Length: 149
Image (cartoon, rainbow, N blue to C red; front, side, top):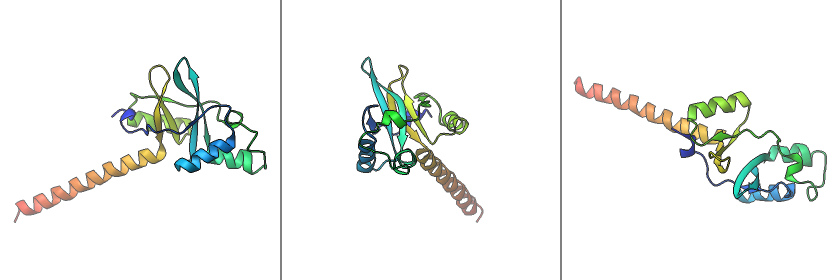
């Protein structure tokens, strides 16, 4: 299954020049732990960075910096790891593990933002699949019990 089928397509985005205060407000408003930093490149909304709630605490709040002046471009993770939308789920999990990331922006062939795949999304998917397997085992046991009476 390609990750484009399970990724969240409702991504909260900011521009590099937006303040970290605006990013924090958007995270609160949308109940998310990150915002993707995007740039418009020839009409394509291209992800260039990510800022997490942890970034805000560690980089801005703890050292008591002015959140009205510092931009998300100043603190965003510079080496953004992305994955193509046709990547398989297992391959995406391996990639996230190898890169040590919990959030993976999903892009199309031109680098445009499609969505985001998070560790939470994967845990939910895997939990549903494990539940389906457990139900299958239970069904087979019940079927066997009924056929041997």
